[in-house]
Image (cartoon, rainbow, N blue to C red; front, side):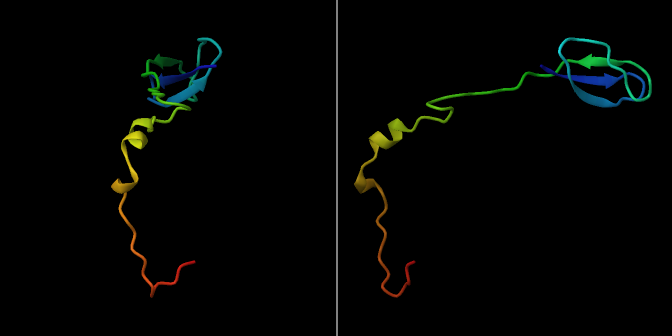
Length: 78
């Protein structure tokens, strides 16, 4: 069921209502509420599983490109 935005014309109360079809919605103050048109949600799915693909990044890097870590003999490693 879609989620619709409504606004009361008398008191200005705004609410979201989950409706199966467009029906008359009344406010707590007793007056009818008018349907507000809202922007649809923006969803962008890229790559595999909805995450951006990093195949090009992994393919273009080599072991030499990564920074080398230096071993510190005084540091205690867990």
